[in-house]
Length: 143
Image (tube, rainbow, N blue to C red; front, side):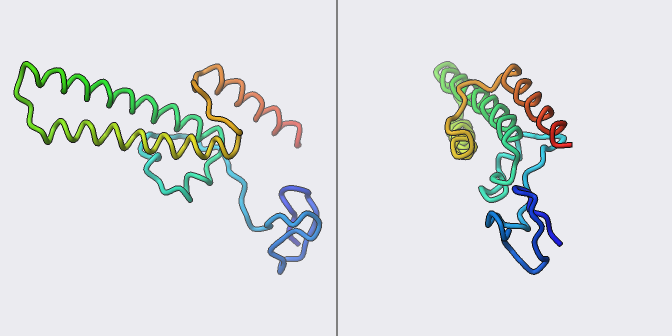
């Protein structure tokens, strides 16, 4: 017997959907990851959509930081090219990094809009701590 992770109704092992609510029985709910790194923003949309909302917020914070860093480096190189000769490949690389992180940021923000109904302006420690507290409180009340 399989138990629906949404309504906790038992269903037969052959069924793909819950007999009570129609939810998919074999779909795994996202679990929070122990560790995240900025390179995970490069994962395809299908894989990112399996991330827990908390993890998406942390990843958004990392990507926004890298995007800001890329922008500042790009602007520094552009301004520096007025005084020193900098090849166009270096300038193009900086601009490409900024565009890449911008596109990745928009993908993650889109996933968060789908889940939360909005994208947070800031992802700071206060937001993450309050969300982590709510998640942990929810887990203890399930037991």
